[in-house]
Every structure is written in C-alpha cells, then in structure tokens.
Length: 383
Image (tube, rainbow, N blue to C red; front, side, top):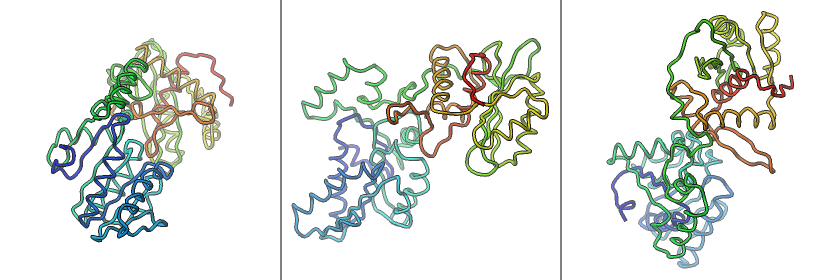
C-alpha cells in the first residue's frame, strides 16, 4: 500500500468514514512493534482509546509471549518492541517519551499544540515516523499539515482515502447510500474525505473575504464589536469595526498581553477615528468594569452578556449573513482561520459554539458583535 511504503517521515491521511483506519493502524502498530520498535497509538480522547486498547490487548491472546501492562495500556512484544495507547486529552503522559512510530488517530480532533509541542518532539531521538489520520474537520491544523504534505512529498506526504476505497462490499454500499441521504457537503467531507471550503460551521467565508482595511468615510455609519481578553494570557482582545452603510468589515485591531488601561486607550482612539460609533462590548467577567470606564469617558457603549442563548443569536446571525453573501470581511488570515475552524456542538440538547480546543474565537465574537450592533436588531443585551 502506497500510504505505508512511502518513505516520508510524516504522512497525513484523510480518511472517509468506515474506511478501516483503526484496523490498518492496529496492524501497522503491531508489525512495527514486532520488529523491535516503540510505538505510540494516540486517540483523541480517553474514551476513544478504548477500542484501540481492545485491539492491542487481543494480540496477547494470539501470542502468549506478549506481555501485557494493563495499567500502562501497553504491550511488550517478544522482540522488545512495544505498543502503548495514549490519549490526546492527556498530553502530559507523552512528554519525555521517545518513539519510532506515532500514530495519531482522529488527528483533526487534537489541539494543534498536542501535535507540534508534544508529539513531534517524541520522534526526534529515534528519527521516528508519524501517521496523522482522520476525517477532515474544517480547515484546522490538520488541513495545513495535509497541504504541507502535498507541497513537500518527500519528508512529508499526504494521501486521500475515501470510504469507497474500502474493499468490503458492505462499506461500498454504505457509501453509495450516504450519497443519496446526506447533503453534498457532508458527503464530500465525511465519505470522500475532502477538505471542502464550507466544511466548517461558517459557509461562504472565502467568498466574503475580499476587502482590505478601510478608513473612515464621510456619510457612512459604523459600529464596533469588542471581545475582551485578560491583560495576561493566551487570548486576544479584539476590536472589529463594521461599516453599517456597506455591510463590510472596515478594521480589526488585536491586543495581546496589554494592560487594561492600554486596551481602553486603544479602543477610544479607534472609536474617535471612525466618527464615535456605537459599541457593543462583551460584559462578562472583567467586561463590566471596563465598559463602565468607557461610559464615564463619554463613549457610547452597550454591554453584551454572553449566555448560550445570546451567543446562539449573534453567531447564527453571522452565519446567515456569510452564507447569503450579505456581508464582506477583510482578507485577514487570522480571521479566516478562526471562521473556518469554528464549530457547533450540541451539549445536553442545547447548541454551543466555539473554536476547537487550543484555538481562539476572539475575532469571530468581535465580528459578530459589530454586525449585531450595525444592524440594530434589538437583541436582548442583558447588561
């Protein structure tokens, strides 16, 4: 199989549903360990690791020379090689390890830091190899690794394995049935294993991203959306300026690690440069006192309390605006990446929206708030 025999050190494999990735990864792990190598088979979560461990544990039944270390989720081959099961939601257990082969199962569900900061270093000591396998999930870090493999082709290579490539007739029939029963977008992503441009929650991002930053224009109306971050930490404070007249994003300003007085000063300067427009700012946590400070300074600021219901309202409004082509946004790489990686999840029957773990949605929230204020839709602010 070309995927297995290709000499690249890192292989990114986009697989459709029911392609047989667990079986293939299990056989590859066993054969590599049987040759005396150390193998890490990494699941996205601890719960996802259970079928992987069952697969590995079953090998010991076939050969009583294999030692099982159940507490460590590891088996030791007669050759001295080993296969250990890990989960990406507990990366601490992987730090300091060294492997000949790392298999990243359902890699698109990992945070980018698990791959770049934890797993990649485990390959250095032994000049190891890695397989990044999974079904596409928007244009997150897995997409960028896949594209890097297409460009490189030597040290890193990428492959596509649609569900229909599975030789089992029942899987091929299931793929054909899916073609008739799911949307074209879902079929392309889940069964053909393609990175579709609208594979993420927001549709029409690339088509909307046609603008350059725009200065203030006389006669135009503007609004500003604000998503605050702590003065220290990994999040960003973002100010998004929407031209309500053209329904286009006019400016984005990001601050990271800045003291609150600096953030307030920068927002005030931006507010003045765009004709003192109305501001809709996040009011949760430290947002309340910051908004009060701005109001004392004469800025027209309304607080937005983020709840599951209120977030649903502003995010779905942004979703529809992008899908219908009603707004344009700045061609800004960080904004586009956040929009393409954004996710909708159902928790206890309620919709929840967020960036994938390890990524940010600060710019998305600021844009959604700016759009909401620009349209003056009478949203329930709650502050």
